Length: 394
Image (tube, rainbow, N blue to C red; front, side, top):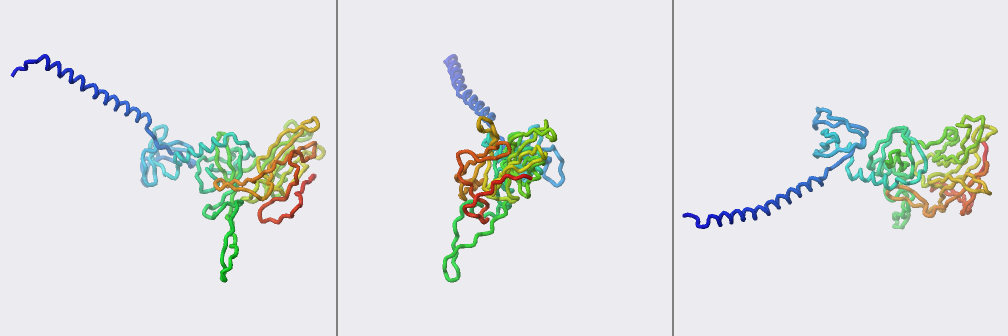
């Protein structure tokens, strides 16, 4: 049968096809845009090499081929997770397998970045040089997360000192220096008595350090040396020199110093023991004798409970500029230890000031109250006795 409305029917289907094409085209366009958006925001899992160096291998097998070498700090994209290995890709599109213990995840990496940001403007307590290769840790302690590996002889800036147990499993209860509640026990008769104090764990000192690239982390203290001239280091007398600062320079034509300018030093020292609840227990000033061409002790203050930072500056004295310095002192045995970092600080620190006129070191500043003997807990203290402040010649 012939269609009586051929023109109308053809026109109708052409209109229907064009109307139907609009939502189809819109749906395709939306899918294309969504796909592009997903492509632009695709998330890649990243890991970072935490050991000195290693190789990527083409497969996980007793016999495999090396693909390429990767080094400490290098970023790798994760392609696949194995049981103890990760399949990764370098920035040069080199693909291979690496052991998972040789890398840190992005969360730990970001924590190190945040730590560096937090301490990028912190004042420097002392300068030091690494004696050994050391790894920066996120927190003090051998078992904490580690990342950056610094080579021996690297120069670093030390910011804060803290103590941590040598073996984390040994630590039970508060850190040393923190208040410890009394424990009660009952003897055979039922009487209540005080429990014996548990043996304290072996402690190690750590320094929060910043390197020349601005990377920040905790370094094991025994693997580094504070920068101290040899002429001054010989007077340590069995103690550890925590820091040394130039107070002034004296002209001595017969000296071997550059331009014959002999530097005079302020030093702070501590016993050769880790885990102490203070940064130093002695302040000592070395001046240069033009007559004898050697260093001599002009001032000594000990035993005290001193804390960093030490500040060296210039002060006005009778219209002239003289060297001056200040340090923090605990006002009592009331110290507080941060449970996370292990940093011990006095609750109410005092700022003690001194000025040096020629070879005389004199107390000055707003705080002129007596300096008490405050030393290591458990050590005998002579109540009311002032610490020794002496002027010696060696």
